[in-house]
Length: 234
Image (cartoon, rainbow, N blue to C red; front, side, top):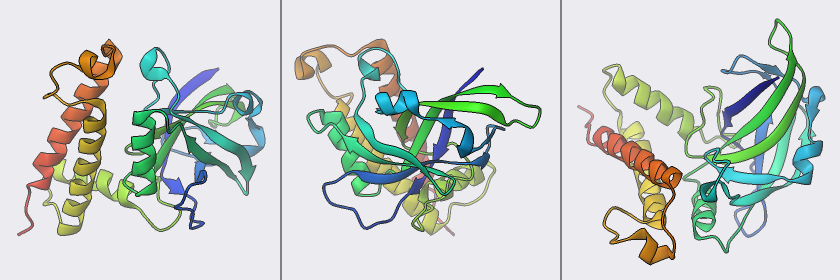
């Protein structure tokens, strides 16, 4: 058995649902992706996930930071795609912030965690079992393109790679980076920034080590994106 955590997608179903109901997403598509596995929907086992269709953030599984931020409603396979509707726990401040990011289209990516069983030489599992879905700021799969024509996450990833290779950031990509910085800032504000006197005084409880590590990771990402956003096009 091979446990896989990070197969990301930015495939959001476009049915005009920007209101109050579940947010439709393509959670996964079949075929070979960057992780090397060739997943077929005919071999997907959803029994365990349907009994506990948790929606997390950033593949955090354990401790307080691993509490679900919502659930996936009606997970199902249709035309070679795994579909589901994201429903958020609005009594959780962080979950409500993430929901707002998705409804306002600052975040359009999810990532699934699954167990792959009896993988053959061609990378095809005889069976794979979904156990978790997470919202992620950026998809890790290079084929992650928005289902409704929005490819912002893929474009941003390519822009970052290009700048690291010495390319100049275009005006369009600079706008993408600026939007990403804004989204990260709002998430950091919701969790409590460095200027807070004490997270324990604000929330009634201290942050766990994992929560502090996640905040530092977000701050590091924010700083990198701010540097990129200052690169001007000639």
